[in-house]
Image (cartoon, helix red, strand yellow):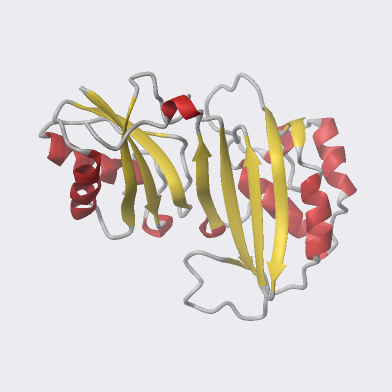
Length: 256
């Protein structure tokens, strides 16, 4: 039995999220169908995290155990043959049995893409959120910096419908960069709460419009009060799980 670690990219537009859903298609279900066919038996695929409906990934990481010996390069080719065109395995490695895509992760990076102009080009619509109102990116960048550090992010999370040990998380960096009408948000942290990234971006957009001040981020974090209507959730289609970080001991190998 070998444990495989895959890096996966997907366009989440047609899916209800990563996790298997009774109501419709999911990324996890498609991955399990593909690897189950190759292994000739059901295989549970575990992800580094649950992306929401319509959210994309450039660097989602999953792991699974497979009794059938398949060289990692062959695993990549075979998986991509079986998967829908909007899901692709980018790489495969054999990793130690102790590796867990979620529990072994040391951190994650998410990126959010916002198009700020009167008209959103239809070719960008699947992957860019849109706001036609004027937005001050410098105010948003000043506000984003205030998220960095250890904070209780309860005001910027949604109910995950499961018990949480803590809502404290560490944000190591949060940048806002603009190029013409394109605004890119990039945030790294040790972990994120349910809808936390979309909530932080939604609030930054309010700051950019002048409805809130950059200093108000610190006020909300210090209060650690339950979420209110002041914190909107940005649309899912602008969000990408960009990269998952792991300790070196889980680098794995590309040969059996």
